[in-house]
Image (cartoon, rainbow, N blue to C red; front, side, top):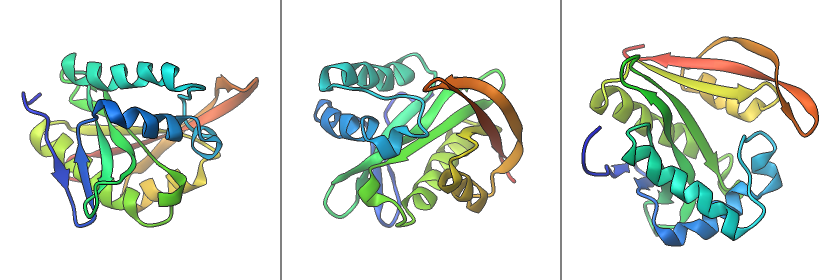
Length: 178
């Protein structure tokens, strides 16, 4: 992976490295019931959220991925987070993840931001495959991935337990030059 943290930009968003003051917004997102409903990580305190901030930093340090703070290009306001994890250079693939604070939903931000991450993954990191694992019930995320031309490859039935019940996970993928 490149040695300097890349800043990615589109018309409305800037993707930048997380800074310590982002912890409050990360906590706001990863404790919000509407976000964590379909997300695999949640925190019940600002103190516990430090674990997530360490995870963001360790991804890059250990060359296992890279996550960005997604911010408004106009005023720098924190909108959400997105990036790559479980990066495998030998298999030329990574998993994509993304979340937005609810007040930023339905504004086309996911479909504006994810292409920036994909371009970085394919062009800079030389990856061939980006995977997305989505809870089967998460219709909004599935619609967005379809818009971004990710292919649904299948469903892992009842593969995880969440809140005492089995959930199924849909597997999406996008290949370089596809």
